[in-house]
Image (tube, rainbow, N blue to C red; front, top):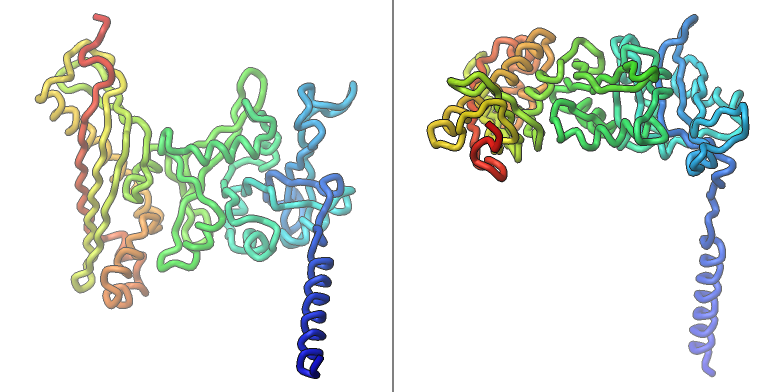
Length: 394
């Protein structure tokens, strides 16, 4: 064999040896962490401690054995709940989380965390210092849902979860299916970060509270908190929240109830879909906003025996829907102007449409937003009556 052939053969052997070593070292879970060695966190609450400075962080940690046990697991006298509530404190959120190791025999695992519930008093001081850890660390996911509460977040994490075993999972499911009413605006950590870097960073977070039901504390979603920059400055009720969602084009379903013209009764319409178009222009120092909303709906129920299937009634009911939707948008706009918070993103629209105008007005955008002229047009189309055209019972 020639010298060239020997060299090729040695090179081939070396490559095969290298591949073998790579397979040996990368096969298997070199960074695996066994479930029995981890404290899996499903929900996190952030509050101020009763005394001193810093933060009090609470955790909803699942008990896997009890989570899958029909009876809840555990013997007589034990806590049968499928989760454990833990609290820890620290000058920063990161240190508070690390200090939990003084109380938990297992390391906190945050990759399965579903929600972060922040006390409103803390949110009024600023969210950036709270959420910086969750965007910087590799474990928490950017799909975390963000919520505000006027209560101690532990009350939310410890509340009854209805059909679910763990409240954090139930809250996550509620937020994912907000379209059934379109009166909640769910916000994930990723969206908060995105808007924080946008031209106008104003936003809203859902408000969650507890309520008493049959002697048990349960949670309820109730309106939105208005975030200006990174601070809580005010609130929207559910009607105003949907007014915001109409403009953002995020109303995909829900119900609209109106008074039936000429009758003593109401009609409720189911929203099938909607769309929104927003155009923002600036002439000199005057900002003009044009909002066009289109909605398609069907009659779901009526409380009057009148025949609503005639073309004349169709037009009247469509007009009533348009007035109702326009009223919701105007209510949301009035609150946003009161708080001087551009939660509609008009500034971002102007930046996209006329960058030069945006650069001219951005330094005083808060004032321009408050005094902007806003034209609202709503077009409602009623195209379904259900399985009957007239009330079956009179």
